[in-house]
Length: 377
Image (cartoon, rainbow, N blue to C red; front, side, top):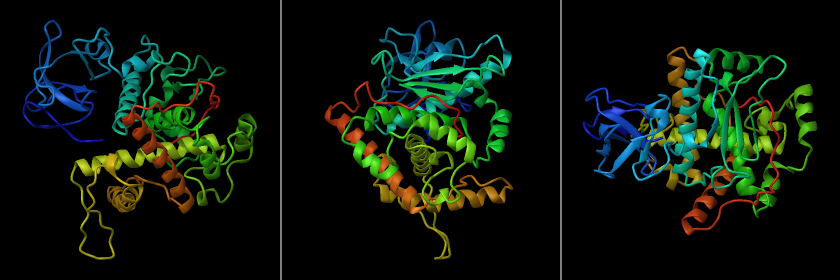
C-alpha cells in the first residue's frame, strides 16, 4: 500500500485516518484516484476535495462513514447511492445490539478496504452482486448463533463469509495456537477467500485451467474427502518442500487460495516499502541489499522476489530486536516460488485484458469450493 499525505498541510496520514492530526482537516479515501484527500465543507453542503487530482470536485461521505463511523471512503456527489464502493459489497453485518460487535465490524470493514485497495491497484476485476447477481462479490460478516451452529469462514460462488470472531484478537490467537499456525490475520482471511473468487473468474473454464493443473494439481479431487483426510491425518511431514502452508496441502483449490493470499502479502508489503523509499545498503557485502524501487504494479516477478527475501530478513531481524515473533515466519521453497509466479502471470494477464477492454472472467458455471473452516494466513 502507498503512503498518504494530507492534501491541505502535507502531514503523513494512514489509510484508515478520518482527521489530519496536524491541521484537523476531514480526510477521506477517493477510490477513483486511490488517494486519501483532505476535504472542506459539511454533510449538509457537501465536501469539496482539496486533492490536486480532484481539486474542487464535490463528494459525500459514505453512509457508513457519516452515520456508523466504520468507513472513511467518499462517494462522488453525482452518484445516486449513499454507500461507497467498498460498503456496497457488504451484505450482512454483525448484530450491533451486542456492544463489541461495532468494533469488530469496524475491523472487518478496515481489512476489507485494504484488500480492495490492493485488488484495484493490481487492476483486477472487482465484480459486485449488483453487476453479477449469480456470482458477483459479496461479503457476509456473521456470528455463531450457538456452540452447535458455528459460522464457517469460506467462499461460495462469490459470497465470502467471515466469522465475526476472527476480528477478536484473543479468539484469533487462541485459534492460531490450537491449529499450530505460524501466522493468522484478519486481512489474511480476506485475501485467502477472495483467491477462491478469482479462481472461479480467472482460472476455471478458461485456457488457464490446464497450466493450473500442472502447477497445483487436479481440482477435480473430491473436496469433502480431502478436507476430512486433512483434519484426520494432517499435512505430509515434508509439506514445506512444496507448499506455502500446511493447509495448502489439503486440496488444489486451497493451495491456490493460500498461494494467492501470500502473493498479495508480498506485493502489498513491497508497495509500502517502495512508497516509503526503503532501501538496504549495509556495510558488509555479505548482508542483503535492496535498491530496486520499481512500482510493484510494473515489476517483473523476478524483481519482486529479489526484493522480497532481503526485506523479510530485515523485518524478522527488527522484530527479534523488539523481542517479538518473526514478522514473516515462512520459508519459500522453489516449488512455492513457481506457484507464486503462476499467480503473478494470471494477475498480469487479467490486468492486460482489462486494459484492452476484454472480459476477464470465467462463466458462471465455474466450480467453486464449498464453505469450510480454514486456517489461513
